[in-house]
Image (tube, rainbow, N blue to C red; front, side, top):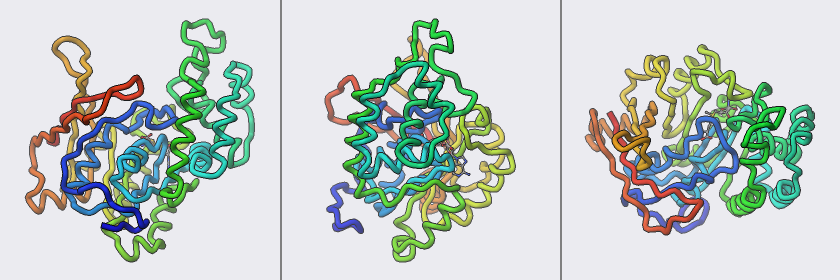
Length: 341
Ligand SMILES: C[S@@+](CC[C@H](N)C(=O)[O-])C[C@H]1O[C@@H](n2cnc3c(N)ncnc32)[C@H](O)[C@@H]1O
């Protein structure tokens, strides 16, 4: 089968999802990064039997879901946008001919408190300098947060065992950026804009006009709780309500995720595509207890699959088998099951 981009579609859309995800899939450490949802989304895409020609992530952040699906060849191309100019500059540079310059800047960076203070105060224009500021502060600030109030890892006194450079493996990050940059021909665009503008932009694309069912949206808006402390661009309660209304106008298939929060539940639980997803990891907290992360997922494709009887209401367990791949230090092999309820 030839895809829109002219690439041979290697993935049988009906096969079971069979992979594992790397913890370093994104060079950005992102608060609430959603890479662990990628196999679940891939599985849903497989169930729709329509390979996305364009996968759009309008709240890109660390963009780990888009990158996972692109690298695993579940989608032809991706489009990324974020309202934060630092984040948008980062991705625009990674997927541009400046990627090697950015990789060199990272490789040569002096990871010191003085450099952290300089960059924190620096007023940078969109582009490679903003991209560097983004990755530097992301890898050296507490929780990966780019928020103005986020402090350096190890504190201003650098008295902790964890110093400012403990999360900044310069060689690995530079190499990963070069690796990702090779996918640039499959990145339709990276823009610094709000999700509303992205919706308008995608409506104008030929892929949407010709094959709207081949446009797939993954929306991961800022959290309900504490988002004002994590992201430079966050949502007030009214923004969440407006996004819920905007989902009715999204062109194509879409899936939205939220960390489980009572307000998100109240906003979406009556939607026919509402589901709670439990990610159960093989990593154990102790002998008996498994680490369970609960996500709220809402998707028009879940509603469609349920209407066709291809996805049941109630607790459905989707087992994700292990990928036949050697585990390395970079690769977490996770035996997963997804419980939709
Ligand atoms: C929860 S994070 C996304 C995390 C991402 N899914 C990942 O796996 O790393 C939400 C992102 O939305 C961005 N954002 C906030 N308000 C926005 C808006 N109105 N339009 C587009 N992006 C926005 C924030 O800058 C932040 O990067």
